[in-house]
Image (tube, rainbow, N blue to C red):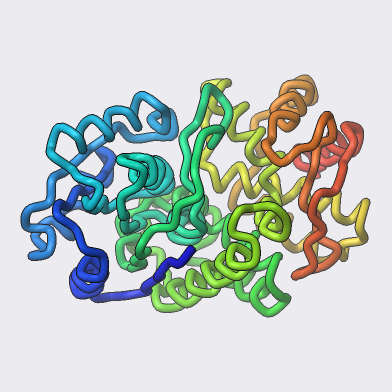
Length: 366
């Protein structure tokens, strides 16, 4: 699988070049109602999109379903899309996931380009070749492996993003740094070390404008994060071994995300991953000797910016039941990715329910 990732501040030029590199006889743009309002105006007048047809779906994770995918397929078909059509996914992780899934299955696969509009999509959903939809309360239960022809990343788009959504993507960047090296991890831990973007300031500000964020530095950190993910993906594109390192924080994170959604108090994906990282690092210290000081520093950062999930010990049984449904498990064993040190993942680690409950206690109470 080959994918071109472009970091740019010349979006029209790079999109035009990327489209020219994949022959097409029709262009479609997939958005949700949020990106149609805030992000589509940034590209709608591009000459390369002059005759593009728009497909807009509802916003939110509860739209990542088979009925929504069916609606996308039907719109493509009704507008004469052939197997040489091109789909441009303009949006966050949900749009990247379902857009890639719809493209990879329509007429056995059409080309698609991702233009991620959230930090989470830039560093996670839009790269790596995984597409999917949810089934019931289980995330990404149905999906394919299919690479976008190009992923075009312009962090200037993030200026319209609420800060909680920025933090959602940043959790995946924390994960990537833990899988990389100490220097990368330290840079991630220090990026928000400024009074103008303290946790208190986050609560007062509904967007990123005025928070003093260095977008050039952020673009560099995004590029490093994407490089980490692509390194693991390139060595194991079909998720049979080493790529499972990228599951760090996700075993408990996905369970928390599903539980919170079912409880009517949904949390962003990255926020759930941040909680999952706290648990995974606690278990890593106990089982594979991850350094306690590095765990404490990472957990302090997560507690400061992400808070704690709204769970009690009475919810543990439901959470463990959700964990047992993870696709990466074998039999009744719950498998985790742990770390013996920064840059040293330990995949397929069997963790018993008592240790999982201890980690959830630590997440709730510290």
